[in-house]
Image (cartoon, rainbow, N blue to C red; front, side, top):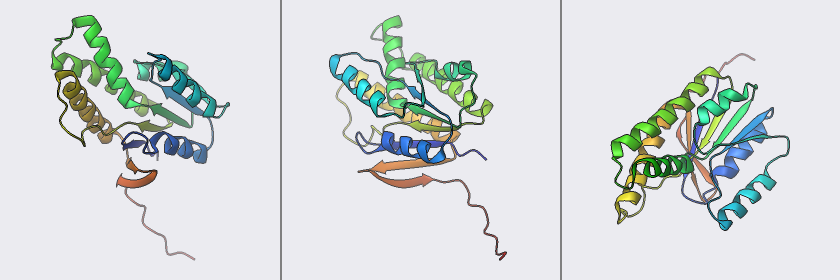
Length: 194
């Protein structure tokens, strides 16, 4: 049985590192799906560092959206597919909606676009025998943001996280590099045979 995971936590909590460690432990063929875009020099530098630190034999799909379709289009059998991260994907969808419909775009419209994106990812999860490891941030643990766009982002990411939490068997909350299991698959009964 597949054990799809959602790795969540704050910034620099060890989520991406844990995702990569789990993929290495699993062995086999890995697809790393990178959702970040190099919008400035700092981000471009961060992306290059991430690329350098990944094993060279891993395949990479750089995609800011339409991830589910991109994965299925690869038509390869991967043992593990890491999506890093849902946080940037949500940001990308919001930015696309604003670019297309303006700053006063209705929240419901963005949510519809995001839900369609997430449904395509879960469709890929159902169709493939790969283990999916999805990285995301918890952004609702602090103060209420002081502007509409930040509140919209927080709310939509929270809903996206809940949607993906329903689609996976395991959820790990990362805190300072340590893991807390929030959701685990049911344990198989132990056999008492000798």
